[in-house]
Structure formats: structure tokens, C-alpha cells
Length: 195
Image (cartoon, rainbow, N blue to C red):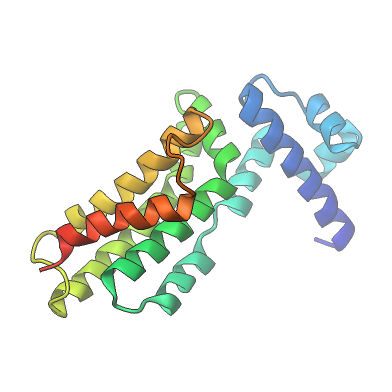
């Protein structure tokens, strides 16, 4: 894809995300996407072909987590509290970046369940990283014995629940800044995991 096409594709993807997060997949037309992106309908059709192809490109382009998984591995210190906070902050950054896509997946979970499943694959990737990390921490004697999957689920469900509540309620229920709130919550979770 050349630079001009890429720019056109990016504009189409951005316009589609905005419209679909507000109205849902079915309610948005190619005509609206084109108008919102500042181009003709023919350009949208030439670039992607169908509305479903645009949505699939959104999922492929915006939900990829490879670099984040590498960043987690690179920044692990084997200090439980620091590592869980770092993982949680990266997870929230990814979720915040994809907030509109998450809203689309919620609206379309019944009509297009494959989209909803693809959006949630990132959570499974993060969960695996945390499970593997906790296994190593158990081997090092830095985490209590137990099922690492259940331990990891506790952390990830807290983070996911926090994001969902803030997204659906359109704001935080806490007056603390995000990092302070996460730091305090992670301290509590880490205390339960320490031997």
C-alpha cells in the first residue's frame, strides 16, 4: 500500500470507528463513512470493497498486541507489585486506545459475534502473559502456591472490569488519577499473592 492509499485507508478507518461506535455497524452506511472521511463513496469502495472489510481492517490494524507483549517481557523486574502495575497500565493504555472498537463490539455482539470474539482475544493474550509470569514467580518463591490461571484472572478481571465500568459510565468513579488508583489496587492484589 503506497503512502497516499495508506492515508486514505486510515481516514476511512478513523471515520468508520467514530460512526460505528456511536450508531452501530448496521446503522452506518458507506455514504456516511465517505462523507465523514471527506472522500467519495467510490474511493471507499475501491479501498476496501465492503463495509464488513472495513470493520475487519479495523480489528486487524488496531487490536494487534505483539509490541505490547514484547514490552511486558522487556520490562519485567520480578518485583511483583511493580510488574503487576506495569502490566495493568499497559493493558489500560491498550483498552483506552481501542475504546471505540470495544463499544462497536458490544453493540454488535449478537449480530456479529466474530467481531466481539476478536476484540476480546487481546484480553486472552494478556492473560497468558500474566499466567506465565505468575508461574515463574511461584517457582522463585515470590508468589503463593496456587493456580496461576485463577491468580491471573483476578488481576485481569479487575482491570477489565474497571475499564468496562468507566467506558459504560463514561468516566471514572474514582477521584484519584488513573495511575494512583491502579497503584493502590495493585498493592492490595499483590499483598494477596505474596507468600
